[in-house]
Length: 343
Image (tube, rainbow, N blue to C red):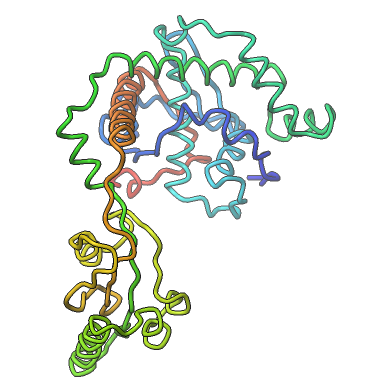
């Protein structure tokens, strides 16, 4: 299959509202309804036409994905980085298939009934056009992506409809309860810290580990006795943070490995030093706070939890619609193997 130049980057975001992370394909028998993972759909008869990769139907609507368009879509899932011939993976193929299926759900009556503001479509179209030096460069970019002005407008309209449909789903959801918001705010709070890492190399003996643990304990004693932590980090710490006095900045709990996070978030006051060496997969850490733990602001926590609810509800709704999509694949272009199906 011919490899094309990278799809213009402005096209990657046009349909972002339609996309989720791709799930695994796990059936290819015609008539089977796939229900596992994120791609529930009905499998149709294989496509034999060498110029066509996919044919998708939803009710009376049919979407045909040409082989060349499928190839360009493969590039889009890698954000324009070319895929060498024959080296696209099951993940790439499944991502493109998932995108095509989800886009096809836009033909659902409940989505098609949504009125799209033509002025909003025109404004987004002009914003895309303004990224290019002149109309000729814009037309060339559209041609390279296999689009026309009308098809780009249709894509923008579909994106706006889907966004409006997502809004309608969100309006039916209850706000998260106060106790859940409080717990989330604590869990997603930040802390500032610095550390001294005594790295343990793979295959190190127990005697080496014991020696490094003893050194870490002595460094803790030194800090508690008033020795400057940054100077000790510059002298003893392995890794890039040593040169800046061990400073790690501020971080959330999920940014660090569990033993380190547990130790950092267990302290209360800025400048506290954890009383013993912390063992992680990297080695032994001496940890000192630079900023006391601070919970996430209540409104931020509420908004984050609400967004999680909206994403889950919208995903569930789109999966419901996807069950009505019938997909016919060309096995010569989309070689999904039995191993892929068991993922």
